[in-house]
Length: 210
Length: 158
Image (cartoon, rainbow over all chains, first blue to last red; front, side, top):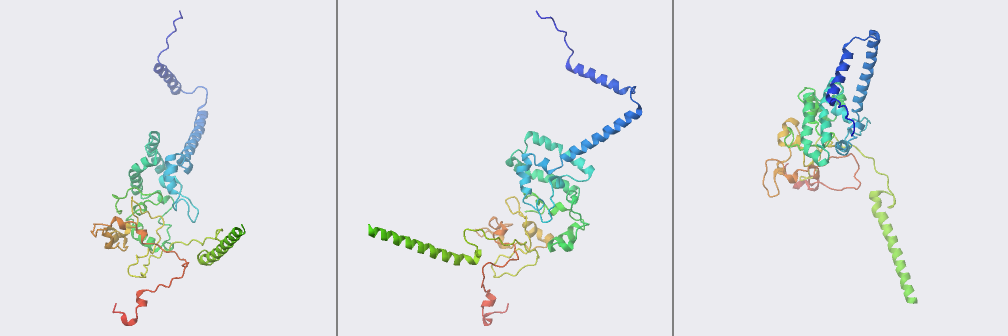
């Protein structure tokens, strides 16, 4: 007969005890380190945390990161490669986040929080095949257009600004349209420039399209 | 045996003569379009030119000619999902865009029924309408339009 073991308390009770112990240490004043040392250590830790946070954030803001998933790489990224935003006469490339994430910090964080839903989509394979993606394409495009309409095409204006536009260097049609609609504030970039970096979704119910 | 050999020799000569004539003929026929580059070699491709983008309408060379597109259409999608051309040239879009409206002949289906908008058979614009590039025609064209062809006496007041 084996000796009867002393039964341990359940896991949640032990975890609670540990949490209470840590809380007990945290709420008491320090007795070993000076206040100055604690403040300085906190400052250094803050710098390290902030640097790590921003580095990680920027890592998720690159073309390599976006195209590391097949949902992007063999799909919308393949479509982008045929457009002027990927290769052009001046050799400047608009990477995925240039159009899909604002450069301004506050707007960027807001967009990144919104984008956490995309992780959910990735985990559950919402658009894991081209066919599934095409089924969702209209809805996804509507989200992008709605955001750009609401923020006055902020992502476009990461690079293109109406102030630096020299209309004498544009084609006659571009001059006419920009002067009538863009400079007067009647329309924003995305109102006319839809489907310029990817193929179009079904446009039947989109205003201005047939 | 001897007769057989003669026959074979004759055949050989005939074949050589045929190949030589064909090669000569080919060199003469194709030299106009592909330049002096031999058939088994890649010639140098002509320089690519941008699409003309003046937005100035061109005269038609004959009345039935589909009007040319006087502007760049690079990246304009015309597919089952959408038609970029129609976002300016459709009837309902012309007021805002000030572009010429697509002809109402394009509203008629193949049974002669007029539809409310463009007929599916006329949907793919670039089947007939094309943009232009500033290049020399590879083959000379001596087309004469009807106004030039008719003697002055036959011309009515236009």
